[in-house]
Image (cartoon, rainbow, N blue to C red):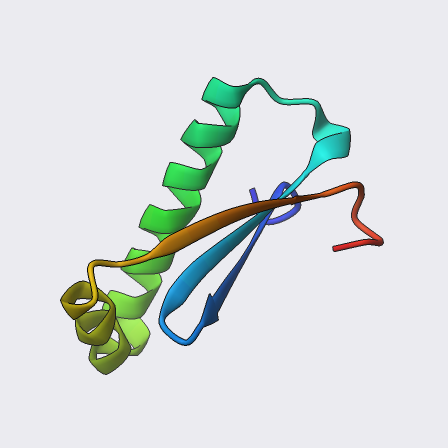
Length: 73
């Protein structure tokens, strides 16, 4: 999954970047983004509960972007 979707936390906002070259349908993109968000949540539960609580308090904002290929990412 990490090769398909890159995750960033910028000012508490989860930014998911999806490569267009993978040619996934919208349902598959939505599913992969949901998996990435849940994986990030699980990681924060283990590593940084302060940041996790901050995200929960600001309604866990998310942004999904696309890029052409892995080099552009």
